[in-house]
Image (cartoon, rainbow, N blue to C red; front, top):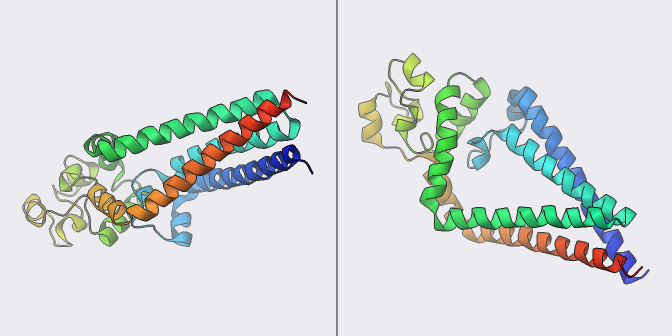
Length: 238
């Protein structure tokens, strides 16, 4: 087996694994969207994960779809020795790599900006769906109780929310260390930290692990781009 053939086989197997992982994530995302409560009941809650704050189903569907596209382009492109598909694979991975670097820079250098962007997206959803959507409410209650946090930033995230307006101007009990009634006076006195700050603290505590995972993903993406470009260039010689 020549080196070109070896690289081609490895490219096919690697992207086949990515394709299967993407299909699995897409399927789970659709499952969570259709029947989120049964998913939570079976697998429990990830109380320290950011996936409990954003909409899990959409995240899984988007990531799964992207992996499906990448896996298909890489696997089929290598199998058929298609320069077009290999270049598309390279371009998609490069775009993802650039976006990841940009997000990492924003998160590390402009933490306040990242917080503002996240707050602008999550806070309106929290106001509208907390106390209305049972799955969403259950996930947030578990998160706030286990992580000992309140809202995304603090108790004020619930001001003028559906929950606030239908519960006589009170806040969820975790915002007051489970003290009842959780009114504005008690909430301000307890001053429970927002879940975003708690997540940032956990990331800082596990910075080594997070950095290692990020470096591993970046290395795989660079290797995938290098291999696809090698196959692309070698096809000219065949």
